[in-house]
Image 1 (cartoon, rainbow, N blue to C red):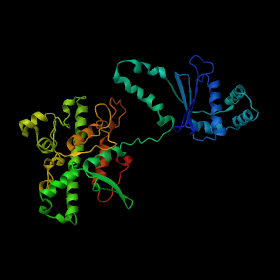
Image 2 (image 1 turned 90 degrees about the vertical axis):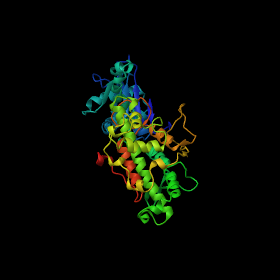
Image 3 (image 1 turned 135 degrees about the vertical axis):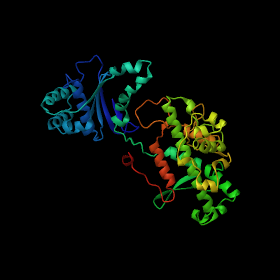
Length: 419
């Protein structure tokens, strides 16, 4: 058996597997009997791939009897088998003289004892995992993770794997920009964040809703220094709306992280969830959450707020203090609850698991979008009961960095530095 490196059997082979029946102990490779027929077979298959098929992309070799598994990195075979002159001559004789396979296996078994090297090998017996796999206790399922990893494409085929908690989630980032009303463009080699083009703008997005209110209430002319926000009214409306939208979305994302950690700390108790339309039905409620809940000690909150947000803590943070530009222009409570078309490739699903297509009110879109992700994990190896993509604080840090750096072109801090 083989595993190809691509989707077609015309793609190069990446993994060769030799399988024996569990009862065939005489031919099976083992610690006690490494110089076995199974080893001779895997050597022959390897030489066929390297020489006959001219394939130098082999990744791993497997020998198994269903229960016991031996996994050998193909690089070791390249170094000690393919480059062994005796084995090479034997293979050429086998091919040129059209010898049968028993001849090759018999002769190679005479050469193997003369090769004085050690080849590292990963070994496991799948029966060891049976007790964790077949019982009803889900808490010990994490013992299966090493098995999943060793048999995954990332290991067997040495597939590329971004194992960096600071990798930008482009799907999340793109849909977040859509909700705000922005798009990312390239300009002179830089990636810049800009307002969507005319004809593509959605009145319900944060930035478009803010621009309408700023314009209707003539807020730009009342700014102390309007010129710092642009050279004309059009630029000033956009830049003020953008700064406000960034402030609001920063708070919302921070609160989603907070909610996830509260639920996790209280062992999955959903009573600690507050970022949903049951508690926050509109932008006015969101404004209440910002300033009458998180910015106030529990004993200073009014009775209605205490009851609705009983599990939400006080945060002594400047993030939940009104900014100067909010005081001068708009609070999020002044936005109208407009609707936004769901992005074509949105992560949001309906109850049947199909992608949502109908427009959503902005506040509903925000919560459904955020709820499609898992904010509670910090990349630890664990079992995910749902099929949500992971978003942790490091990923959000990158997104903040990109959005907040919109004027000069965004840049990333590599994960290994921030770690």
